[in-house]
Length: 410
Image 1 (cartoon, rainbow, N blue to C red):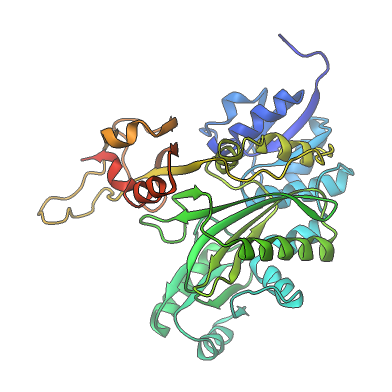
Image 2: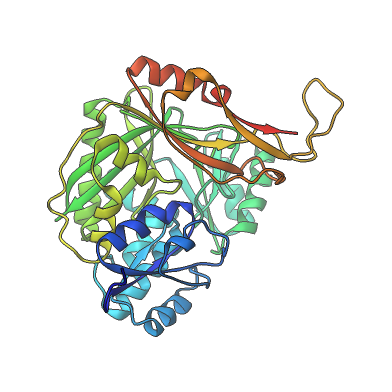
C-alpha cells in the first residue's frame, strides 16, 4: 500500500549494513532515499528511491537534500557519510546531529586523541605528523611496536603495525597515500583484548549500553566477528560509561548512538582506540537487536530524525550470541600451502559443519559462485548470526569458527 505524502529521509549509504536502517525508517513512516557511489549496494533495492552520488562530497549531499526536499538525513555506516550528514543537517537546520565541527572532533583520530587527553580518558601515546621529518621525530620518541594510521579512514584501511623504523617508514608511505588529510597519526601499540561498546545517549547520559568481544581473522585491523556478553568486568564497563558521559558533556552531544572500540589491557583498563556517532557496519546493529531484544536500528533512526528516544531500556545481553563475517583465507594468485599450485581464488560455496548448524539464527549470504577473490583482507561472502546455550559453547565455537564455517575456494 502506498503511503500518501510520506516524510522524506535521505540515507547516506546503501550497502548491506544499511538494510536494517532502511527498514526501520520505513516502519517509522519515512520515504527513504539512499545514495552512494556503489550502485551494487545490497541495501539500495530496499529503499523507495536511489540517487547515486558520492556521499563523502558534503556539498553534493547538501544539494541532493535540497533537491529531494527531505525532512531528515541519516548517516550510513561510514565516517564520511556521518560527516556529510552532520554538515547537511547543520546547513539546513535539521535535527538529530551534532555540529560539523563536533563531528570532526569525534571522528578524526588526531582530534579525538587530543580530546581524550584533555578529559583524562586513557588513550594511546600518539603523535600527529605532517611530513617526513615530523614522522622521524615521532618514531624516535615513541616505544615500538607502533601503529601508523590515517586520521579519517575506518575498516582497517591504511593501518599498519610496525616493529622497526623500516617497517614504520613503509607504513607511513601507505597511510599518506590513502588519507584525504595532510597528516596521519603515529601511536604506541596497546597490548590487550579487543572489544566494542555501543551506547545510546539521552541528555548526556548513557541510557543503554551493549558490549562485545571482537574477533579478527586474516586482517588484524578489520573486525571479522563479535560475540556477547563481553568478558570486560563491570568495573571496566562502568569506566566506559563514565568516559562516554564525559565526552557527551564536553561536546554537548545530541541524543543518539556513541560507539566505541577499545582494547582492554591485562590490568582491566579499557583504552579507547576509535569512537564514532554513526552505526557500526556489517549488521552490528542487528546483532545488538538479537542479543538484547532492543530494536537498535529503530532507535538510531529515531535519534537521527530528532525523535524522542528516552523510552529505550538499558537491557543487558540475553543469552550468548555471535555475529560472524564469512571471510576467505586465500585469494587469486596466492601459492597454496604445501603445494606447488597457485590459487585461482574462485568461490564455489560456503559450508557449515554439522555441529554449528543448530546454532544458526540467520544466514545472510551474498557471494556469487564463480566470483574471484582478489583481496582476502576485505572480501566477505556474508554474515551469520549464531546463538549458543552456554558461555563455554560460545567461547569454544567462536575460537573455531573459521573451521566450522568455510568458503570453498579453488
